[in-house]
Every structure is written in C-alpha cells, then in structure tokens.
Picture 1 (cartoon, rainbow, N blue to C red):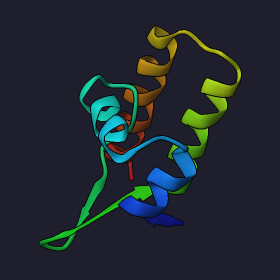
Picture 2 (picture 1 turned 180 degrees about the horizontal axis):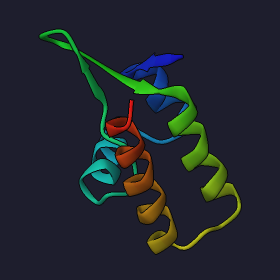
Picture 3 (picture 1 turned 180 degrees about the vertical axis):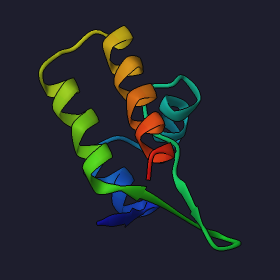
Picture 4 (picture 1 turned 45 degrees about the horizontal axis):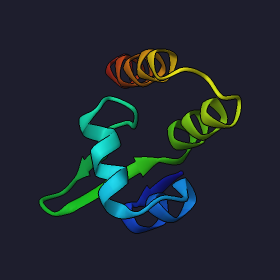
Length: 76
C-alpha cells in the first residue's frame, strides 16, 4: 500500500516540515515518484521506521534501516 504525503505525515505523527527534515537527515525514506507530481510513501517502510522509533532505536540504527529499505527498492 502506498500513502500520499499528507497521509504519511499524519501517520508519522509529526508536522510536515519535520517529516521532510527527517528525509534530509536520512531518518525517513524518500517518497517514491509516481508520475510528474505525485509522491507516495510505501506504508510498510513508514511503519518499519515508526516501529523502530517506538522501540527507541538510536538514530544510527534508524539511518541504517532507511538505507536498507532504499536498497530493497532496487531489487524489485
């Protein structure tokens, strides 16, 4: 399932600017480009990051998780 940015921000539980800052910091997956304007976030990737935050994983582990999720997109 793919989430629109607004849906992903709501599920993430933080403001939109924090969502984009976390993307820039490597703490959130980059949205997938679907067409010229649409950007979607894979729900399973977002939930994996939320679970890591709930588990109080350090930022280094969350960054590694994000890199792993991005690498997984390449194998499809």
